[in-house]
Image (cartoon, rainbow, N blue to C red; front, side, top):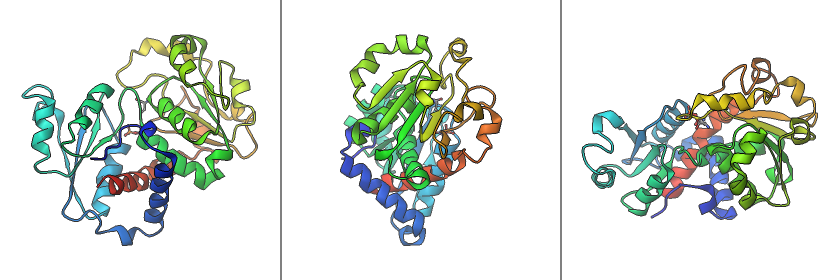
Length: 294
Ligand code: CP
Ligand code: NVA
């Protein structure tokens, strides 16, 4: 059985083919409108979500399928019976399941049950749907990611981990700008993945210089302590910083954005910003992921 848990589980060829399908769906949605007829996509969100929830729901419906969101409180997720038994039950009715939670290991354990295909809708460790659709956005906005210099500014978090997995696959130039406290805390993991094309620094200027795309995310991810914010005070991405990037550089953010913190409002609303395009592409890429798994 196929699952979509992490980018690192896939070969480059498979990722390319998912992106290709996403482009086809985007170009000609009508020809895909029956592909998931009589199928049901389930969703369990243990953390907040706007984009993932809306894009999976609408996306699956546009493929002709039905969706069912199970409220974790109403089903007593992890309380009334084992999570494994909930999954075995759901597999009797639904065909594919999106889970967002704070426990990546549990997600892996659940997928190993092979009760039904599982899609990672974000965990504490990764956000593969986001990064895959960001790759489509990059391809559409500035061209093949393989020839681009991408800069990440902010935390060492789930989204960055997925970006690094993509970088390892495509070997593009990736600059990772982290405050020194965050760098120190994640040194072992960073060293494990470091490669010739990856440059890790705490200097904003060095990291952003000549970038074709600058990405950021919340300083503090869902479920984390707010005290972490203090490390990021000097790490806002704004138009002034973007001047060090290449002339045509784009700004990306998976959203939700915290205006005035990791990004200035003026940059988020500027021409360089492609954040709404990013949000839109979530749907096409996730439709392609669903088709791949089913
Ligand atoms: N980017 C993203 O996954 O958004 P949501 O948390 O709103 O789903
Ligand atoms: N890193 C963020 C991403 C939200 C889509 C979080 O986990 O809260």
